[in-house]
Image (cartoon, rainbow, N blue to C red):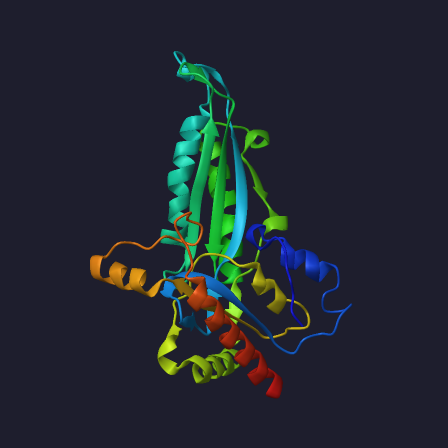
Length: 281
């Protein structure tokens, strides 16, 4: 069964297909495999790893409230810009001081908006965050700590509980980490190596980017999944980057142009051989 899935980039496609009965309206698969183009692996090669390979992703909005007023009389206000500044710095301690250094965690404030004029202290500031982790327990700890820290800072600034920050987790956009089933991934790795050669199958590191493909392995059916990376970088360009140390364009860069004449045949061989090996098993 081949799944032509929309909306991967917004984490909505796999959720929608599963909720519509992908594994009940149609034949339930025994194995699930996917490939994703890579902007860091040369064309003609693939890479993969067992266990966690991509992170969970959460989008979180924080609305910080205050008591606005004139910039010349800050003592008559409770400045949400200052509270926001304290909050951004305090959030960095969740990963560095509350979570085990052996557990990957990222908390990034990607957007901050507040105020409208030089001499006006506003009533609120809005923050937008992205959270990344592998372990579901770490995700829960991140969100709980954000709620606790933001409330504590608001209280220390003199705000009433009714004006504590509002935390909104976009559950509809959340996706879990992608966990490559080790036994299945070993079969996929060996089958691809037999098709394109051992030297063309690389071991990769886990990344903190997210992929909604992981959802297919998180259903009650508990079907094993494997995602591997298909090299897309022109081999000469890759060699130059190794020599010069110049960073290659990333996946979403307008300068990333996959060497499709090499990549596509490699992908076809890799995917078809992996599927046949799992089918024969």
